[in-house]
Image (cartoon, rainbow, N blue to C red; front, side, top):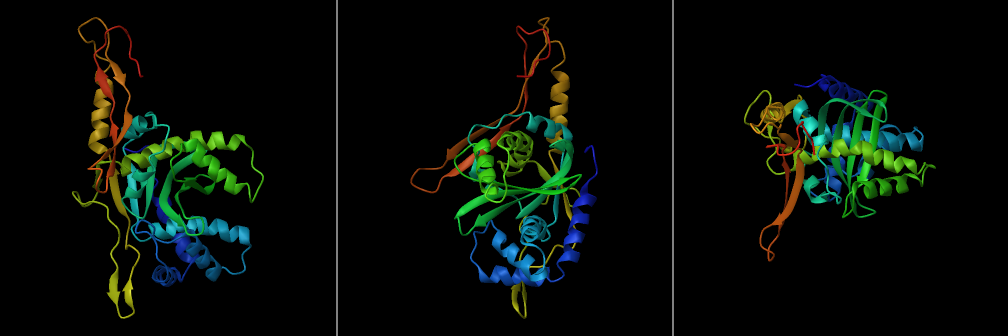
Length: 318
């Protein structure tokens, strides 16, 4: 069960975008037909910026850039409208699981849809309420790099956070993002550390959805799985159309219940006059497949485990 009911927020933001960009469907199909993009990228940020220019030519440049970053997340999400509602017990276990020093960039290419909205239990971002976030991938044509972009749904508004993907840590990824932002404004050095710490729980949740065999089910049509929308053949050629309504996906319902029971059982006597302790969850990744062919990076979340106590007389979380 979630601590807050926020899916109306995502839909409300979508309605705002629909009003601001009345020609959005036509423009999206226009730009998708013009460029070649990786199959994991719906449109590039430059394309979204062009759409912003066409719809709001008189806005100041800084406003157009800000609008394009928000439009990229919500405009892409408009075509699938997947709302992922994560179990609160699973959420608590995921954010307590340490992420390895190097961010497993390969895993994020397995996003279940081009853009997703994830509802999270009661959380904060820089001291204010955080209700959920959008996540999608961006291909920077000019710089030839992939970005994992977040749009945070905060109490004060929508906050874009782009992370450069590569063989580096979360801190280094944020550092690269801050370095780019400094070209536009003078930012304090402390901001890198603050954002790195705040973004960790968000990345943990997204990693679970992109990892091997996450527990995801449709609330209204059990047994179905998320997928990319399919183009429709029209008189003007193949076209993509927005989803008619949101799709609600429950994440980790059964696993969350198991985790809750596991934590409760860890407080039971073991028969050795000491209590069991709870070994917290952790991430495990490795390459699979023969070296002579295309290999796949397998990434799994190992859930918390009750370990029989031997020395510690109280519950311990490692």
